[in-house]
Each structure stands twice: as C-alpha cells, then as structure tokens.
Amino acid sequence: MQIKCLWIALPLIAGCSSLDTKPSEAAVIEFHRQLNGGDFHGIWHDSAQAMRKSSAEADFARFLGAIRGKLGRVKDSTRTNWRVNATTSGAFMTLTYSTEFDRGRATETFTYRDIDGKPVLNGYNINSAALILN
Image (tube, rainbow, N blue to C red):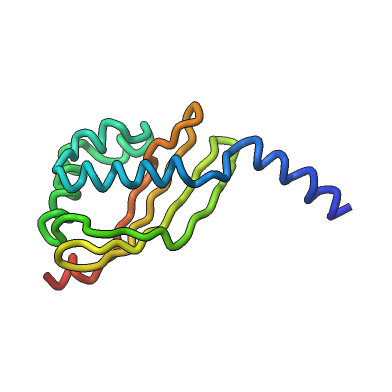
C-alpha cells in the first residue's frame, strides 16, 4: 500500500509544481541585477502579494539599502540547495545561494511562488556576519 501511495503522490506533486529550477534561478539573477542597480522598488513591486503585505515598501527599501551599504554589490552567486513545497495554497520553490559581495559573503534564501507558471518572489532571507561586523 505504501508503494502505491508513493507512486500516486509523485504525479500529484509534479502536476502542482515544475521541478525545473531554471525559471527561479533566472529570477534570482534578476533580483541581484536589481539589487546591484538599487532598484528596490522594482523588487518590491514584482514580489508576491504576501511579501508586499509583510512590510511597507519604504521598510523593504531600507532593508535592501542596508544590505547594499554594508556588503556592496553582488559579485558572484552559486546555488547550494533547492526544494519544492506544494501545498493547498500553491507551489513554492526555495533556493539557497552562497553569494559573494564586494565586502563579504552571505547565504541567501529565496522563496518563489508559482503564479501562472511564473516564479514570483514570496520571501527573502540573508545571513552574513559581514552585516554585523562591517
């Protein structure tokens, strides 16, 4: 019975969400381009409604400005992990990156929600000692 359930569950997950990381990876590249260019409004505006509701645009811009001010521009970024989560509220892809900035390294986590087949930023997290020490 367990094997049957496994075979039934896999097509359901695949049908709810694409396991192709390329669209979300392209969205991360665009996020970094906008971050480097100071287009914080563009990042916020293109984000999922849930993310926009979690903070005011001005607060989000200050957050990204602090990252840019402390760490500088993104120089290089390598995906280190990814996962897909399909729930009743939608399909989500989470990508983790090791990112080198001008003045330090960080671990970034991007969560994209699949909206009409397009990845839309639903969450962003950054961890870096350089944010505190610099």
